[in-house]
Image (cartoon, rainbow, N blue to C red):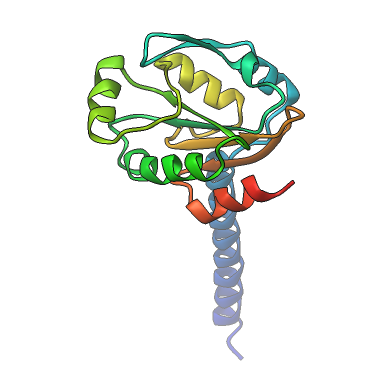
Amino acid sequence: MNHGSSDKRRQLLVYGGLGAAAALAGGVAAWWQLAPRPSSDRAVDILYAQTLEGLDGRSYAFEQWRGRRLVVNFWATWCPPCVEEMPELEALRQEFDGRAQFVGIGIDSATNMQKFVQKVPVSYPLLIAGNVGTELARELGNASGGLPYTVVIDEKGSVLHQYAGRIKAETLRDVLASS
């Protein structure tokens, strides 16, 4: 009997199992960093305390939307998935008119955003936030800081849904249709 080859096989299995466990743990850790974190009531209060300038030159206080269902989309003109989802968000805004308030928070310059809306008209408020918007998105659970990032807040000020990446229209429609 050759105990040496049996021991080597056992050793390979142990190391292979440890390697697989480490890879799985690394994958879970990477997913955890990208997945939205649950938002706190404090984060929603921080949002409602904000007043940002819109592309139309008006100041928009988020407090005015307290008590309404609110869809907040963090985006930028240099972000291809953001640009792709804008027409769908506009269509959903029209579909849920009077039942949900849509707001776009641009992590971008006013000039770039103005050029964008000349090509892709959007009827809901687009607010200029720059880096403040990145921090606000993080407060609302955007752990990775990636764009686009969408948050739906219910009438009571609780986060109903968070979505990192290009949102699917059906997903957002289901969230907005739920009570």
